[in-house]
Each structure stands twice: as structure tokens, then as C-alpha cells.
Image (cartoon, rainbow, N blue to C red; front, side, top):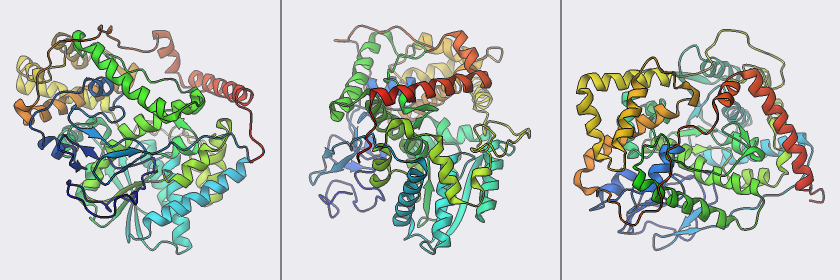
Length: 529
């Protein structure tokens, strides 16, 4: 935290409880209500308000993107701490300057060595006080690198801790099998936490009780296992920010492939008379962040929006549930780590950095396949076994849960219960639920977006019922022009082609190579630094 606050103040917030500095990319969500009180617990902050009104922008962006933008929350009366900000003495927030991007160019081996050194410094500083560390380990590269760095620090006696690697998912999935291999290679105790259909209902209740329905339960996986089993004085260490910082990749798009965020009225679920106002609120949050950046290239703006909106609004928001039990820290987020990577030319922030870093970590970590491709990053090993590519089956599990609700509560009674969400277009919502519940219709082309949306609305319905009459119904007054409903952002042909791995991977490789070459012409390399 900033030195502007050095002790507990009289507005409901205990300082000195955060691992992250104000300049960290990852910060535990902090909320400020109309009274000026600060609270880590959104549900508790809501309880302190006498009346509440829906923030239509947060509703639209969560329906469309899966998270609220900027400082917005579900309700206009409560604001979230801005990205890269500090808390002032009066409890208000001060936005800090966003660190600059650069165009430096170094040999990839040197970049990997620098990143390795900076990650050691970051993790050592955070983890040194803890004797028990729970390391979130998947079959991905980020958590593998964090695990390798922790092992290096233990071997050098810079850390003295008992480490348990935790992996959730279906037993025969790539993430679980490969994570176990990584843990064994490093000599860590490994804990497999099974993820199944029964955890859909559990995560809805967890999301309502501990997160105030701010994100979809589909993102919680088995985080509740940590809440129930971790010692309160332990540290949970994660690497969710690794792709974005180390390889400049966001949801499988590199920083040069990013486009402006554009929340829409997905599936037409927001009432037509409210959708224009919702879009306007979303645009306000997007514009505010752009203005903070000043005059910078678009790729920089788009990386800011991914960090300031997506990573913060979805990843950090979801993982804050663990903080109810014990501290959680995201590696790669300290200022001396991400500012170094941001100082590099965007075309050199590639998989090659990870390839060299994994080699530097040793212990044959680079030879273990990556869960995404089932091949090692250096192509030294390709796994041909019949492991499942997905560690979950949320499409089927969500449909089973929905059908169970309809059967137990009755079709009409269950759908009528969603009328508490006064922003919903009830007719479109009912039609949409019918599609989700129909086993003969394939909605997998959009991944689990529809399922995640339904589960979020189910959790929001339950949260709203608990709040009762304090949520004011929305009436149409001075509302901007309504927006058309939107269900898909890609044509049917593009969806079919992108579902074929060979075509998707080949076209992506060609596109990225082209964009990197163009970027070196548009943004000349700085070789003088």
C-alpha cells in the first residue's frame, strides 16, 4: 500500500493487510459506498446501503464480457477501487500514472534471464514470511514457471516453506495429468481436487455468499477447497497473469491482435428501453481508462484495457474469494516485473521468452507438454495419449443443473423468480432459457459463454432476493436509443473454421508473424537503451 496511509482509519478498512503495492497489476478488490467506508467484502458493502440501483453498464459488460468494467459494480451506490490506484487519507482513491510501454530490443535469452531474476525477487519478497505455500498448478506454462521459481528459491534456501501444489479438474484431463508430472519433477506434494457437476450448485452459493454475485460461478472451479482447507496463515500463490505479462497474450490473442472492447446486449437479455443507457455507461468506463493513458499507440491502449478491465475485473475479482481464508498473490504483477516486459518491443514478447525461461529453470520443465497443445514448447515431446483437452464439462453440467431447477421448482415458477432482475427482457430471457435447456440444440460454438451467463444470472437472482426491496426497479426516463440484440460476433463459417485446430493454429501463426513484422515498421525498435 501507499505510504499515504500508515494506520487503520475510521472508515471500515484495515490497512497493512495487502501483499500488493498500489502499483501492482493485481490488487484485491476494494469497495467504497455512499458513506465513504471501505470494504474488501462486496456483499458487506451492499448490506450497508439503504437503497440500491442497478448499474446498467456493469450489467451489460458482465452479460457480454463476463466482468464489470472500471470502477463500476452491480450497483451505482458502490464503486470499486480504480486500477493502479492508492487510497488517500480520507478514504478516497487516487489514480496513479500508468507506467509507459517501450520498444527496447534485447536477445531473447537475455530477456528470459532478466524475467527469471525479477520473478525470483518478486516471489521471495512476498513468500518469505510464510511457512506454508499452496501453489496453484495447472498444465499451463504460467503456473509451471512460478513452480520452477519457487523450487529455485527453496534450493537456494531463500525460502523456508512447505509447498503443496493444488490442481483442480477432471481426473483424465491434460491439466491434471501434466500438473501432476510437473509437481513430481519438482518434488512438491501434489493435491488433486476433483471438479464435477456437483460443484455447479456449490459455486453458485459460494459466489453469492463470498463475492456478492459479482462474477459468474463458472469461474470459481474449486477455489472453495482452498477456502475450506488452507491454514489462515498460509499463502496461496498463482500465476494467472503470466501469459499477459510474459508472452503478451490475452485469451489466446497477442497484444498486437487485440481490438477495442465493445460490450453488447448479448442475446437481447437487457430490456430494449435500457440497452442504450447500458452501452453509454460501458463506454464511459472504457473512455476513462483510455484518457488516463494519454497519447499512446493503440496496442498500448488495448493492453491497458485488458489489464485494467479483463484481468482485474474477472481474474482478480474471482480469485479474491480465496482471500476470505488466507492471502492470495499473483506472480508477474510486481511493478519491476511487468514494467520491464512492457519496456520491450511488442514483437519480441513471444513464446520464445518462455521457452528460454523454462530451460533456465532446468529439471526438464521445458520437455513436459503444454496442456493447450499437448506438445512441449520446444517440440521435444508430443503426447499422443487420450487425455481430455478440457478439465471440466460445464456445458453438460450447466444444462443438467438448469433442467433440475425447472423440474424441482416448475417451469413457470422458476422463470418467474427472475423477475426480481428488473433489467431483464423477460420474453427474450424465457426463450433463451428454452434454448439452453434443449438437449437437441448445440450451443457449444460460443464455448461456455451462455452457460456462464446463465449461472451468473442464477446467482444474481439469489443475491437480489436476499436484498429484497432495497433494489429499486428501473423505470425508463431519459434513455438513449436502444441497441439491437447481438448473439454472435463471428459468422457461422468463421466459427466452423476456427473450431478445426489445424486451420486455427496455422492461420493464427501466419497472422501473428505478419503483425510482428508490420509492428517493427510502424513502431521502430529502440536499440539505444
